[in-house]
Image 1 (cartoon, rainbow, N blue to C red):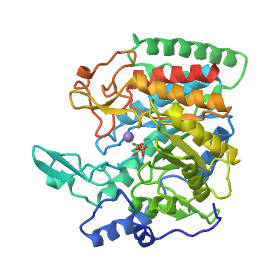
Image 2 (image 1 turned 120 degrees about the horizontal axis):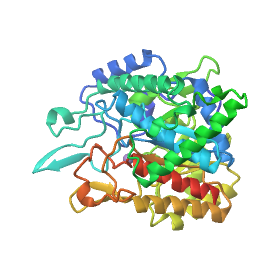
Image 3 (image 1 turned 120 degrees about the vertical axis):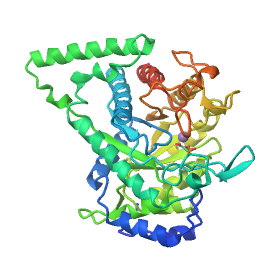
Image 4 (image 1 turned 90 degrees about the vertical axis):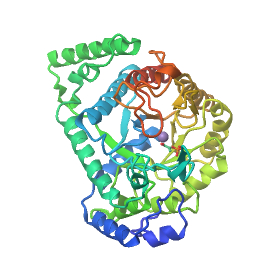
Length: 447
Ligand code: PEP
Ligand code: MN
């Protein structure tokens, strides 16, 4: 990371022929939107990004564990109090399971307040002989299968800013206003299905925590330190217009930060070494993630680390591996070993979702909970074998009782998918499946 205030211009970035970008018909309209975005205040503060980078350095050093989760694709319609607090509750519940059962500090990062742009495998979608542009996330176009909705509209970037601001505002209020106090540990699970095995296990653990807190208070220890939690926002930095317009020089350090979110990641499809996304992000100071799929070689990982983090700065790079349950044990060892042997200390995080997607017989895109668990186990096995630290999990989840992934304690089968399949993109773990995953990860962290 060179200590420079240089920010690549949008023209420079477009000259690199970025992948997965919208095709806006009216360039004057795009320029107007970008000019408006440039004047809007930061969504996060540079100092908070530095704080998270320091926490990610603890993850890389084997002293903390990252829990990162949220929707595959946020939607403008999804910006409601219920929906946002539901996601925060699941994340807080998972974090408390991990903290209490594994006694490891948990770094909590939402996939929210900016996760509105999706890479797609095809530019178009065909239904009943009609072909339209593919849905690329609410940042780009609408989900409805009509030519009007699917047109790429730059005004949506301003809606992304507003939706992200509203989401962050509510999250900050919830998390600092008492909702996150450990005393509320029972209430986060209040309307969960308590007769599920994971829900009951959680209730038991929550009661133990309450007793421990009551003991401390009786001893005269102030429990105010448990009033709030640190929580950060993350998303895939995919829209160059949005991310570049929100890249600002921090008045304190005189260095560039992408103030659209605390932590930004580069997706599997846009991490070309000489590509525009790497070029923009290598100049910002935020902690960065890079997704690494099953075809990744150790050389590619090392080259990405050299490009994005030439100074080996602690906490700068997180490799989010998403190899698939069937590949993780074959592909991951060489990558981890060579990166570690090079002297680099990066955070290794497992995304057990994106390598395990398949189409059910009834046409729904789904994931099997057993595959998710299998990939997490494979990730832990590989790190155990190499003596490296399995630094975290990155999952797609929601606070709702959705039926998008099959399996788990509720034994969802393919025929159940039709009931509450609400995602506009990839299938998410529901709250019970998320809690089950947290218990399983806690067991791996303590064994
Ligand atoms: C995602 O995280 O939703 C995603 C598209 O992931 P990947 O880049 O790993 O495919
Ligand atoms: Mn996804």
